[in-house]
Length: 315
Image 1 (cartoon, helix red, strand yellow):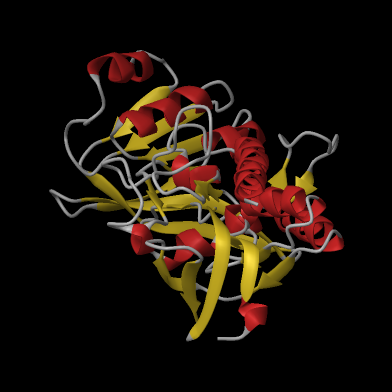
Image 2: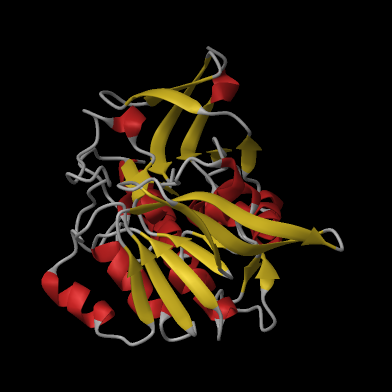
């Protein structure tokens, strides 16, 4: 193994958490190596306009924000590899990581692999992602003021998203494939008692409908199917919010890092430390609740500071 494949700090994953961790670590002369992974730049690279990230009065495009963060981290010495880490060994130090048949070692590791929204699995939802289709109401709800939106899901997350969206939408319809919700009674009542809300029971979204005008995509409606009767209908819709959950990208850490039952990494309260000394977790991979770019960036900063101090103690 080449000595050049050893670093003081390796960051697995990019996005706001990974890039912020890289920025702070670079400024501490740790020369971090970032494995940008499956989705370089994280979930914001498939988001159009970001208006709730501080410092951008008029908003900024998601991919542009991530590219700016990347360049800022690189300016201070961070390096990116567009590879996927497929295996890790945290049983001894230095830690060992494998990516594209290459072996890398590190004195400390920050896991910032994020979480992926669960999708329906139809091509049109990806086609109109960012152009009407979203998996984050708190990120994009503002853009649907006085418009008709649909929310897919039946759990507490769907109720939370729907409740938030009623602040903006003129009409909201919940689409659920069963005839009852899984959400807690109090959450259901809060949403269903809102006069803006209606429900399409026993139904699924078959297709997202839309047009392209002046090279810009626009969602116009949905094709819904009743799973009991087989009846299909098309409805007008300005927005579709998927609230069927998120999946943390933690598969390669199974049996290695402690996780909650839902797969999110456990960290020690008030820190980013995992159960293995020298391994830290930042961003959505350890956050099933907030899932915002700004909270991910904040925890990326914490992880870099935790890693820097941990390394300094061992020198």
